[in-house]
Picture 1 (tube, rainbow, N blue to C red):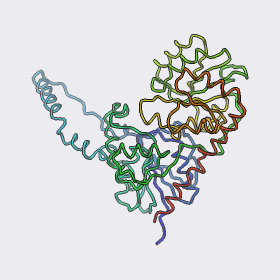
Picture 2 (cartoon, one colour; picture 1 turned 45 degrees about the vertical axis):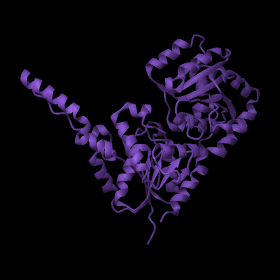
Picture 3 (spheres, rainbow, N blue to C red; picture 1 turned 180 degrees about the vertical axis):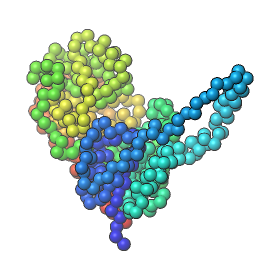
Picture 4 (cartoon, rainbow, N blue to C red; picture 1 turned 30 degrees about the horizontal axis):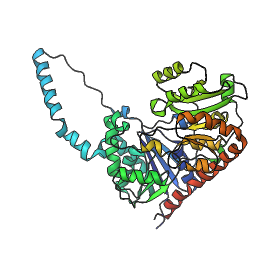
Length: 422
């Protein structure tokens, strides 16, 4: 019997990450026919990356709003009927925890995530193909892969990008997120293997989801393609009219309290006149306004116009030093040495990095590709230490990228694991 040649990747209710796109392309280049299923997947940061890619078929099945049933118009009620309606609502509310819907959400959460038409369309698109493996990206993708695999002997891989517990902010945001977390725990226990960035995160996700500690882990750090390396760029210098010798300390991504943005703006007020802290990313208006109010000395630059993934290296290459700073309150933020695209991008562009002294970041000091700090008060000293040996740190940053964050190298264990499957 010939071996199955298809691999299905499922990405639902989650941002489409560049590493998912890289994975699809790598599998196609290895000879597999890849079906990439997308539902409620934000593609803003990976625009056009899959256009014309041979061997990869993208199936876009829409968004949750496309499947919502329109609310029936409510006819006017008499005062008596309205009173009875309100009474009935209160009874239903008190009984909500034992309603069929609540029972299904609690004990079979995986059945409440994806609309039935999406599952039916998925089955139609998969019909006639023989699959080597199913890969579920994050919680929604895992649920989708789990349900799709019921009609196939192919094993399911869980590609975890975030570590969330039931008491995390993620689960407080919405009922859908709470159900996603419950479904993740249930489906993860049935997976063949977990794709995770490093050993520490692997142990954490197995523990959080009640998976046996000896379950198979395949390590894949968040990485970048070799060809997308450093370029000569004056992106920030031209955007803000800066002198070429201005020291640019860059933090990119989300701007908010959880990313310590106001504290960073405050720390930057101690910068010398020719240093600037650059925020490149997105954030809520109140936090942006708070940063502007803090920046009384003009040491902060806000770059709020996002660029596509293929332009990121041009943005980052124009900076001097990259910040990879996360809060200490949860494992998802602390265990980021190999799960943060910030560090991969900075090192790829030859930027030394400054990070907190969290576990996993030891290589930054050992390989002299940046500096580790205990608090934001030490940031200025770290910048000066790097500037004193700038060329050495630049060379070491590039070397550290090739050692730790080359996607072409890091994808090999996963390709080997899939190749071994019957």
